[in-house]
Image (cartoon, rainbow, N blue to C red):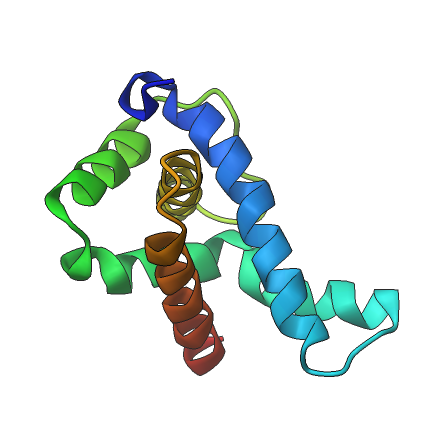
Length: 127
């Protein structure tokens, strides 16, 4: 499967799930076990403004191919309307998720984990 030929919305769909697993693992490593507390803590990392802030901060450190994908995903016309943020923030968050999905499918695990780890750090220092 050629990742560059996959619809960025589909990449974001996958990236959302992959990122969520890493976020859940991260917050569980802090000793939380109650599901309601875990969920409330996870929201901090997975809401659109946090993801948008992370990808904007990391953008200049991305490879040219990664930047191209982020721009392609960000600029994709969307039929989904964001519920709790402005459309531009939502597009940046979708681009973040598409990048994670792309790296996952490309089996670039080390790069993906680096971006996720740095994103978590950015979100913890910002939100």
